Structure formats: C-alpha cells, structure tokens
Image (cartoon, rainbow, N blue to C red; front, side, top):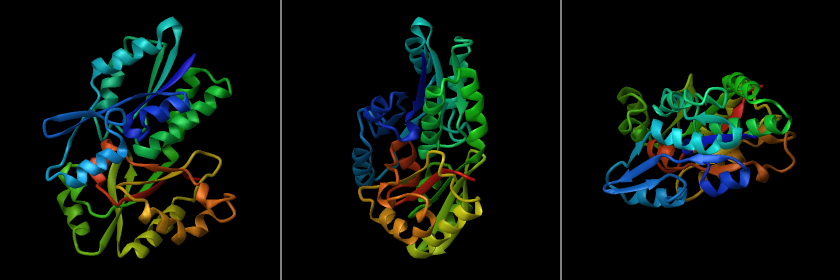
Length: 284
C-alpha cells in the first residue's frame, strides 16, 4: 500500500485529508503563549479570526525530524510505502527534516520537495493519488512528481506585503512597493521562493495583471489538478477575480462556479495576511 503524506502548508485540513485518503502532518503555530496544530486544533477560519485580532504576527514552526519519523513509522508498518510531499525547501526546513527521517526507511519512504506551497502542494497530492490509482509504483510516482512540479505556477494578489516582510519571506525593498496606498502587489513562487511579479493600482487592474501573468506562463493545463485560493474571512475578492478573469475559464470548464476553491491556512496565511487571492496550476 502506498500512502500520500503531506504537511499542512498544503492548506489541507485533517478532516479533508481523511476524506481524500491521504495523511496530513500539521505545522505548529503560536499566538503568544498558545500553541496550535494547523488544520487540526486550529481551523483556517479560526486562524484568520485570531490573526485579525492579534497585534503581533504569530510564529510558525517547521516539522522536526522526530515528528516525521513517527509518521513514517506508523505508515510503513506491514510493509507500506510513503510518498511525502513537503513545502518548498526554500521556505522552510521541513523538507530537510523529512529527508533525514526518511533515511531510516530506505525503499519505503520517498520525499518530494514541492518547491511550492498551499494549492501548489495540493496539486502534487492529487496527482500522486491519480498515479497510485493507475498502478504506478512508489519510486516512479516520486520521479513523476519531481518532473511535474517544474510546471506548477502559483500567482497571487496580496492586499499588502507587510506580512511577507515581517515573516522574512520577501525583502524590505520589495515590500515597500506594496505598502503604498491602493497598490496591489502580485507575487509568484519561482524556484521555490516568493518573488514580486508586479504591482497595479486597484483590485481590477491587479486582477487583470494576474490574468496576463497566467497567460504569460502558457495558460492552464486543465488535464491536471488546479485551484483558486483566498485568505481571510470572506471570498469577496476571489469572486470578483472570477468575474474579471472569465476569459481564462470560458470553454475550458462547464461551470466556473465549480472551480476548486480553498481557504489558505495558518502556515501560509501568517505570511500573506487576509484578503489575498491566488491561482495555482500546471502550465501548458
């Protein structure tokens, strides 16, 4: 039996992971003296309720080697194999911890650095499930995921870059552009790192820029998993983006209202803040 194991930076909560037939290992998040497990003891909505009320940025912790080893021990009992998919090694030490733990399970555990996060990780999870269903073996699946991850694109409009700056995920100089009134920065994940892809005045122009960047990437490969994501307590901005980007979906999917949409969790939400929207896909 092959099990897909993913960290909570994928924004897959525990209950959803169970419904998908995969395992999820949560990151820790601390608000002051309170510690929670992302997507387990703190839902995505509860996280944003706390973030909006908090005067300080919460702290997230990478998943250490011991916790990965525990998960691998459980999932490989009886000869099982594991495909572990992690947040980008450029954003967290989680991948390195998983690799160290996996060394004790030679031939049973295969660790894939997604070079991505949030819905980008989810794409690899869903694709891995397809490959398992097709009868592929674990080494082949890991190899295919490492190839396919090169085509994954994440593009997002954030309300402000101050959260990314405070979390050390983007430089102060880049963040300055996004802290000007009415400027909506567009960020992307390039080579596993967060980069400023552009900026626009107002939400409509930023949505148009987002659509242009999707097309510049070669468009969306609709034969692969894809999805939209948003942060905060409302999907109002996401719904506006859907209206503005109708041309991307028209003729590709029967009902744009059925586009997979996910609420960002605490591991990523800490760094993008509320009112961010994004799209994740494999380029054609």
